[in-house]
Image 1 (spheres, rainbow, N blue to C red):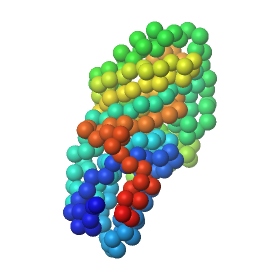
Image 2 (spheres, helix red, strand yellow):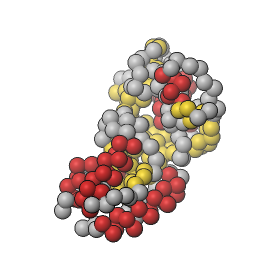
Image 3 (cartoon, rainbow, N blue to C red):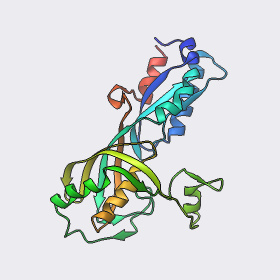
Image 4 (tube, rainbow, N blue to C red):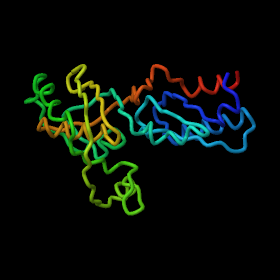
Length: 230
């Protein structure tokens, strides 16, 4: 069993983030539970890489002195699985916002879908979604977006090592992506739709790996709380 001293000296916790939780909420919950369990007034707790509320999967949580390793973990290669929906787009590139445009899809074949993934392998230029937590002029991009304000977003170079289509079910395209830090899978969905001369948005996302850490070895929030109580 992990002791109070273990948490203070530093632990790496693998948590399977549930749907509709922010990464910040998970960190706050775990910090509160650790403090309650061991009667600790203050302990550092942080995560190594944000997941959107509509995404599930691996969060690497660091406590105590291990928080110094967060930047190292954040920089590691990540793996995601999920689903794109073809033929329509949303302003947020996912289901946070309503569909705003629809596009023809009759010209899209299975072969075209598989072939188009090749355009995204390697170093690519990507524009982050305007509905993101990136900051510009001291404000989060989503603050501009929700206020209906236009904001100029610069592209960034990201690296995609693998982009595999694992299942095609009508308009729903299941995928697996292995990519660098800073890659937005929502933007990949939008760009993939454009490359197909149609549209696409992200309907489901799960982070399965960060470096050598695997979601198969992660625990739920409830499971973590149970383990704290022995």
